[in-house]
Length: 355
Ligand SMILES: *Cc1c(COP(=O)(O)O)cnc(C)c1O
Image (cartoon, rainbow, N blue to C red):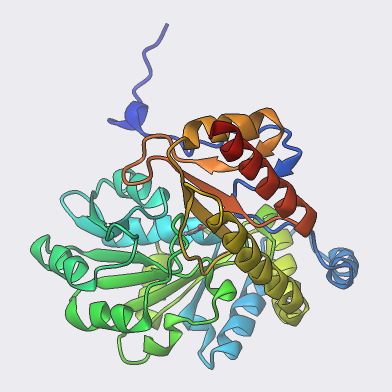
């Protein structure tokens, strides 16, 4: 037997742990609860007929970048398209990180930041959110300065807490740090307020977005970075040639063209989030955190047992094991109205059975 020489530290790398099974109600991954609108599906099927499968993708990705750039009155050189915002974030950690480099992000926040920090051989520096999961801008700025960080990451609205970071805080951070700053806006469509407005004044600020959540395109893995042209050029160096495939690029292109089709869905998700948040907060013993996303974070003393109960009746929500600051928390994505009702009822039944 040959002893294979894996990269140092690889064995101890955490995996992105997805416990998946055939849930009756799947509300564990912040996905959209609806497939493509039929009108978009029709267009996509027609467009697929003219794909040159023998050619590397280029034109289609450029078209998508141009379209996004036009919407923000920028140039296509301000846009980097990638395989989900996951690839964007990974490449940013790679481009600005490296041995001895420090990357600062809030805690709790998106679990992948810690993993990308490790993968890029950088040192991840988590900065605790306040007890109610609100953001402490001066703590964050101090951590960036004290650590002489090379990259700072802010997720707003934040996953998994759902909390929105006030625009004034984002500007305060941008103004007071002297390293690259990315705002992960994976859920911005559910809130409407974007840090895009700061791009002009703060060229070290970048925005990462995705088609996976509000646009329900998790299957295609498409995301993008909006930033200064020089940053896009540099981060692009970290990507493989032709990294985004043509099937995903044309799908995202059509979805973006027809994004107005998603407005009623987004509104419905927001209305459901409000309705279910209100109902859950009336259950004794459950804390509901204010959310600006398509999911709700709750805290409950017996969350572990509640999660088990939900699993047993076929409902998949997200629990965080012993992740820092997320003890006894469960994250519930919005499903269809009947699904949300069923999840609410199950939680209520369980809590009442405990009294
Ligand atoms: C879902 C998510 C992403 C990544 O989504 P992709 O599917 O890779 O585009 C990035 N950041 C946050 C906070 C997310 O929740």
